[in-house]
Amino acid sequence: MKKNLKYIVSLVLSLSVLSGCDQGFDEINTNKVDPTSLAPSLVLNKAIISTTYLDGGSTLGMLTYNFGIVQQIITPYGSSLSGGNYNQINNSNTPLVWVNFYRNVVKQLVSVLDQTKDDPLQSNIYNAARIWKAYAFMILTDTYGDVPYFEAGQGYTNEIITPKYDPQEAIYKDILKELDEASAALDPAQAAVVTDILYGGNVAKWKKLGYSLMLRAGMRLTKVNADLAKTYVQKAVAGGVFQSNADNSVIRHTAIYNNYIANHLAAREKTNFYLTAPFVNYLKTNNDPRLPVFAVRYVGAKGGPEQVAARASSAPKDQIGMPVGYNDVTITSTLQANGVASLWDYSQVNLTTVLKLDAPEFHVTYAETLLLLAEAAYRGWVSGSAADYYAKGIRANMEQMALYDASATIKEADIVAYLSAHPYDESKALDLINTQYWVATFLDGNESWANFRRSGFPALQKNPYPGSEIKGDFIRRLPYPDSEIVVNSGNLNEAITRQGPNNLDTRVWWDK
Image: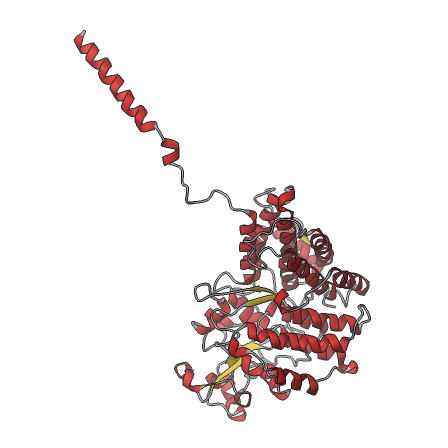
């Protein structure tokens, strides 16, 4: 009996101890640091950041294709750096826009839209995400043509893992519709979303961004549907586009969060990429005060180790652009004629101004908007003087240089002198306007390439590289990733049948 009593007492004490250990168990074992969900506004920020560059490797798509196709920046090297410089397919770099946008940007934006569409208190976040989704898909479809759009990014929400490819015409019509609706629906009366990385919750600026993007998207259709283009250009102007450089859509960087193109060209690719002769010669011939902001030359350098500050010059008279159409061996045949000591002696992008590590990256700017308005005015689609828009567009871009660094500020006298020496000429309107757009979009390879295909300006000469894989004069689109053959071949083949061969020559719908 005593043994049983001892056992019962012992059991009661044990249970009491165990019960005491149970107290606060849930609270102790709840992770209060790692979030289980994120506010849609923060996910939208991540999508905006991801639209530029996630890492140094992702910059290679821009460096090897976009900049080279529009003949602003080029490399003489092949292998992993081949692309627009040789007019060849480089399967490592052609998929980079696709991979980043679908795995990151689109997925994040679809998530934001799904979380906010039925919440009136988050309607501004919802409509801002619609505007940014339109911007992201313009880049995607301008790069590849027909792409998954209406079913894109719905793997998590609706288990659509093989989305169908939509015709670019349908994509652009919906982009314009989305920009129209979302811009109008933004409500300044709602509390500001102060975590907004672009505008700090300033709804008026988001509206201007939406309408400025509508202007850009509308002008993209000038060759294929002028009536629709005119309609949306007029809607954009009526809604209210950018009014100053303070409205620019821009990602700002710091010494910690770097501009990845700058990071890449200041490190592993420092000696590999150069400003082209067509770009430098245009700026130099026209005494453009942006040349010393864009360019630096390590005068007399005979190798990478000699590209040092002591040799650096941004003086316009010293700049010599690298001719296109050469590799690292054949480029040596150009050295004597161009007065350079080696290929390392050609001009490069200035790493102390437009590509310093904390240099901003621009998405849509006041200068670009004005130049598009200049063309729209020339076509008779909007009121106002094409000459006035043209001059203001050039001025806006020159004033934008100060946003890179104080040392990049262009003096007022130099702006006035340039505008006086380069007046608008109605007989050369499209050439003048779109060549200035080429300069104003420097370092935004997506927009430079898209507008070059749309307008046909500047009037660049074909890259004469003998190993070219294209039949036409310029690369018109990038091929779909090989991974799509594995994971979505049926829809991919339908798109190819509709659009044309999956190569560098096939034109996207609006590029006629």
